[in-house]
Length: 168
Image (tube, rainbow, N blue to C red; front, side, top):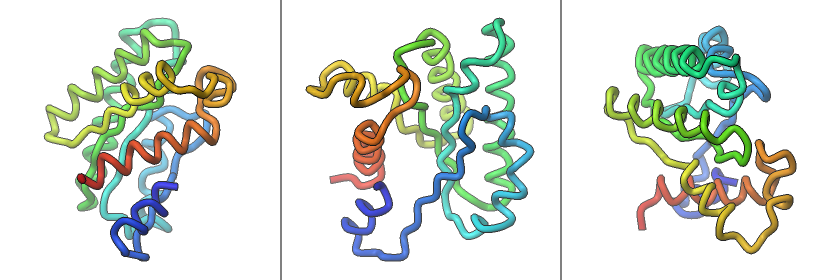
């Protein structure tokens, strides 16, 4: 969705957007995959949007431990992206209806890291909360499990990310 919007706006048919996420996995899981991912099929990327948090928020019972593990993993990902000469940027994760307290802590951690590393951050969580609050669509059309988004939710998010990349 986002790729097509960007191609249409810019006239650049060479734009490629890859989603290299692993369903149900945390930021820590990705640490072991970085060399594989960026040494192979995705070696040609110019920029990397880092968006983790939903699955991280579900880990463990101690909030402080969860946040420490999450922050450490995101910092290591940022440093790795820089070490291979790519530009990193952060995206807050999808807003969720359940587990909101932990998600806000994760969002704040990302905002802190954006300042620390001088990175652009796209606050998709805040945008999503507004969609949920003000959309004419019922919540069940946007999300089936109050955690992950369905097709209409992804359309909203593609539009949001497009608006962050293309300034009008």
